[in-house]
Length: 108
Image (cartoon, rainbow, N blue to C red):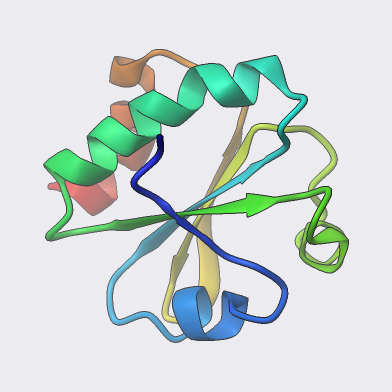
């Protein structure tokens, strides 16, 4: 089970946009195999770097407004928000070293 908080259309602003530290948002869906594959890796990275970054998950099927607003066309899609703005985006399941490279500027 993921340790990441599930965020919805209603809680996104408070949990992500108003966060005092960078937030990695995992846009996913229950039917998406690559999403399920990358989820435990994201959990592990978030636990190892909990002092620097938060991880939340948005189910695109349950929260279509967020998926539309942030132009999510492929999943898994990861976006890092800082100060209420998207500062990094990447798409697709990848191994832990590749994810850590994508997130390096927020983890170091």
